[in-house]
Image (cartoon, rainbow, N blue to C red; front, side):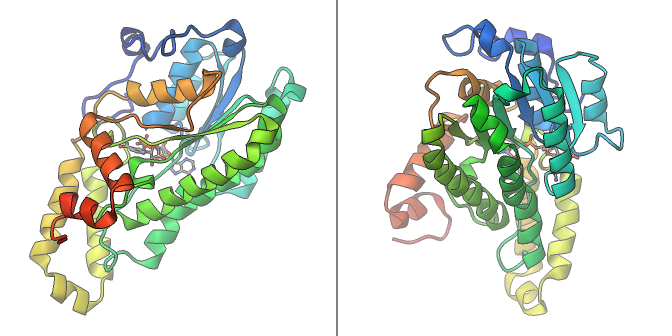
Length: 327
Ligand SMILES: NC(=O)c1ccc[n+]([C@@H]2O[C@H](COP(=O)([O-])OP(=O)(O)OC[C@H]3O[C@@H](n4cnc5c(N)ncnc54)[C@H](OP(=O)(O)O)[C@@H]3O)[C@@H](O)[C@H]2O)c1
C-alpha cells in the first residue's frame, strides 16, 4: 500500500478509528454533506490519498488530483480501480497552469449540478526539504515554493469561482512549520508561512461570500507518509554539500554536516503513525457548520512548543527550544 514504513491505511482502519469515520467529531454527516463534492490535490500518496478514500467512504464525491495519473502511478491507479462513480481521478500538477485549467474544466463538466458549484477544495500537494540557509540554494527555495505556495495559490484562484458559488470551503494543509520556524527547514518554512499568510488574507476576503478558509497545521507525521525518505535525504544531502561554497563547507565542516543529515534521517521513522488525526481535522473543516480557522492535529509536546514559539517573546522561546540560543 502507499504509506511507507509498514503503515497501511485501509477503510477497515478508518472504520476502526470511529473519529475518522462518521460520526465526525460529535456529529453524524448529514445526507446533504454526503452529496457534496470535494477536490483534493496530491492524492498519489500520503494524506491526500488517505483523505480521498476516507471522504469517499463517507459518501462525498471526490475529485482526486494526482501528479502521476498520466504515468499510471500506483496511487492514481489504486483510486481508479475502486471503480466508483464518486471517485473521479484526474491528472493535476499544481505547478502547471494548463493542467489546473483542465482540472477546472473537468470538474465543471462532471459536477451533477455545476450551477451549485464545488463544495470543497483541499490544497494538500506538497514537498519537503531540509538544509541550513548557507547550504540551501536559491533553486531549493524556488522549487519548494513552486509546489507548496504557488501551487496552492494557482489552484485556489482557479477554483474559487466554483467554491464561491457553493459558499463552500477552502482547506489548506500547511504545517506547524507554517507558524513556527525551525533551523535547517527555512525552504519549507518560507513556503508554508506563505501559505498561511495567503490563507489568512483569503479568509478575511471570503467572509462576505460565505466561504470559509481553514488551515490544517499538522505536526510530524513523516513516518506515516512519503514526504521524507532516507533515499531522498541522501540525494538532497549530496546536492547540498556539493552545491555549497568551499568556505561554507570548510567553516561548517563535514562532521557537522553528517550529524545534521543523520538527524534528518532519524525523522523518517519519527512522528505520529496514524493519520486519522489529520483526516479528522480536514473532515471537520469541510463539514462543521462553524469550522475553526486553524486545526492543530498534533501530539501534546508539539502543541505546547507551538504555543510557546508563537506566544512568548522570541528570545525566551528560542532559549527554551533552540540549541545554542542564549537569553
Ligand atoms: N507528513 C508530515 O509530517 C506533514 C506534516 C505537516 C504538513 N504536511 C503537509 O501535508 C501535505 C501532504 O504531505 P504528505 O506528508 O502526505 O506527503 P506525501 O506522502 O509526499 O504526499 C504529497 C503528495 O503531493 C504530491 N505532489 C508533489 N508535487 C506535486 C505537484 N507539483 N502537483 C501535484 N501533486 C504533487 C506527491 O506526488 P508524488 O507521489 O508523485 O510525490 C504526493 O502524492 C503537504 O502539503 C505537506 O507539506 C505533512
